[in-house]
Length: 337
Image 1 (cartoon, rainbow, N blue to C red):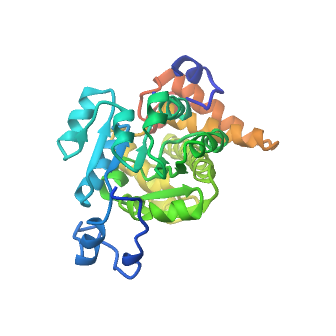
Image 2 (image 1 turned 45 degrees about the horizontal axis):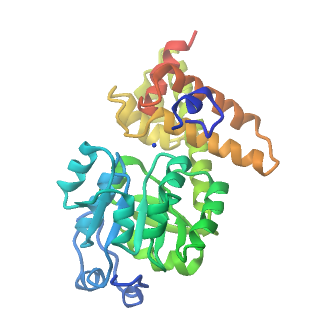
């Protein structure tokens, strides 16, 4: 859960048509993400696209594959979970046997998997490697380790295919609504070729060479983990002093201390007591661990990063890796003396 750096991680590690460049759509107005309506120009572009394979139909994979279907793509889905298969099939995803079958039938293969271990297990499987078509583009949208991603890209290149890392931020709600931020890393020509597909999920930014997207995703979640922890402590301290959480958040959100945690996570998931953001405490700890690990690989040190990692690892151990990450606020409250 923590990029191999905390006990929770150690216990749980064992989860063409031809490729195109949408030149004809450069002048097209963007599709309305609020209404989901499509212009005629958008429809003509979709008609030129290929079948897309989607491996990993979990909390994020199902709504993301659904958006692809609704945008007019033919989507093949693979996941070992029967429940996940059923959820995706209900939205029009064609379920195939496994990743090898998906790779054999498409020129774009999207992965949304738990970590680098699982990504490598899938892509380095002999059957999948043999099934990858020459010129195929593999898009790893998982929260993977950037250095390992660069190494994996070399392996994929030897099979005449290209690896693009394109993790996302915005949670399950963003996946449903098409408002995710997509952080793409890879060769500019490869990223450009799949930019229309990625735009189905939200705002796309090409941030640098292979691995850059995964690096920024981990660093973004280091920030997210830090300000959720700090916001929770601040709001709970205010409550102990007699200030209601709602009043505290109202002031903070109009002041310099505001963040995504104070503006979205606390009002939406913590104050109502639902704790159902769809992102687990274990995955947050894992991403913080990736960020801290990247710092160490670059010869850098961060006392704050290490402290945040230790805190989240403790919370993951106590709450269980599958608990929603917003439950950390309740966990902190119980431990405030």
